[in-house]
Length: 368
Image 1: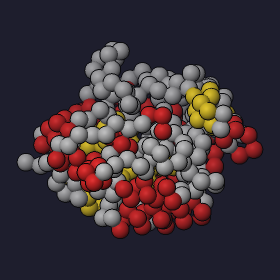
Image 2: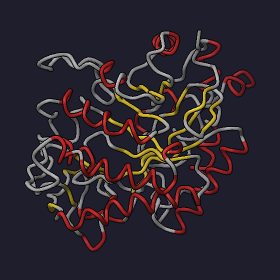
Image 3: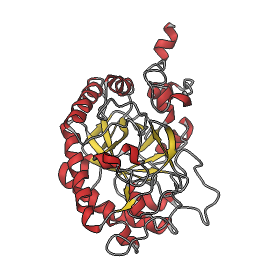
């Protein structure tokens, strides 16, 4: 019987266990959106995870949507990330970078020359907020991308994947979740376009699939994953009118690519695993049955649920988010069923070492 602590191979990446550090935005990049020494230490401390997925990292200057998020589109950023990957590899870990374009979840103060954010639509994300130098503020009204602009965005994902390899990452995860750009195109609750990228499910999925094909072509499918969130309704974005049909189609089209893994958020990101406002239950098992590769699940997993899920063959990998913030040695704590340290919510976004690299391990707590 497989256990949470067994080694596993996903595509071309060999992992020492099945525990994944989920991507967690922490807003601590240096000027130029460059990862700094604190970021190096933060990820090094957590290298016992079978796989680390970095915080989401914008693929170009217009892809940024939050203050001080490290990018993957400049030479300085690549050099900063190289220090992170070297540290994680020296500690025996494996690490991939999450490639991000926020789309309309942004603010003019964060974009070049005060430009408007871009999306599939010119409708703002009502009620959504983003993190700026003035704190959390409502997102700006976006500009709808023209069809002839989309090949350049696909090319930026391709280039970002190549830069990730130059930075020493073991692979990349494309952020297709949480109602950022790719999911904005997917959902009929947002995508009000006509033409080849709007209307039918096939057309709305076109941009995501073009991005995935380009990234796989550039670095190899066996080092490429994707994150999806079929039921997340945050960031001012309602769910699709038929999420089952939409995401069944997406996974069916992704399956032939030979991806290293698909990473699925079950339920609301950071919220209920089984939302009560659905007209009918979402069948995550139906998604999994459409994909022959490694299946990663996320959202509210306890030690017991994670162990059961792996033992029952329902997933190969379990991603933990907030638990990794407060517990750099989370793998050991899960193995030994040791108590977990609660993370400091007031230090999630921005700041310095406090609430970032100063959480105790079991060994350091014993010494103290």
